[in-house]
Image (tube, rainbow over the protein chains, first blue to last red):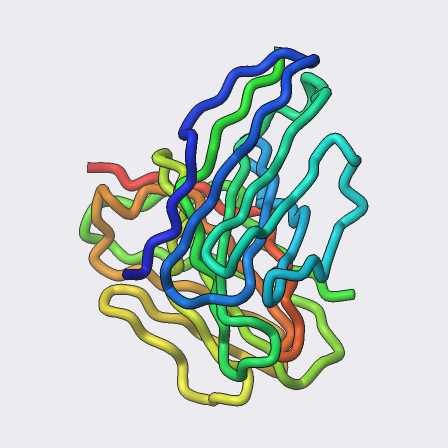
Length: 116
Length: 114
């Protein structure tokens, strides 16, 4: 199974709402990533979890709160977002940094988020 | 810091023809990995091909091959016998051997004309 799944596919929320994005993989990967992608732009790294611990936070505003409950699951909790946060949110997974080799990242299909 | 440059924002190719997408990168490291990802309108990023910097042999995956020139810091992607399904945004990406971050280029939008 080389699949990363993300739910929901689409999400529309108001600026006062609280919502969560979910990402799941069953490849035994111990590194998981959240990216934000604007149209026709490359993905921008937001967070990296390695062995269920947050290892990289790219100075993301606190209205985005990641969580890694177990080695297969990654959540992104959203609260008080701004319209400029509207984007495609991609999750990815890979073997972790301690493992050798290319450790290519496998991406999920993304959640299209619209903030009104 | 590493940078990745894709100098062709858009490219087009006729079906069944061959097209080459360019990518250059800047790094002071000797051990790293390079990747080409494809993102069709369906939006899922799909790994096309990867290259280990310590390998001199160019990677090949079916109709996709790379021309890796380490000294020139160049990593181009050749797509042979282009198909309509190859139409997508293509991103070149770099990762240090010991790191987690992928550094992406700005992407090349490939159109395949029937």
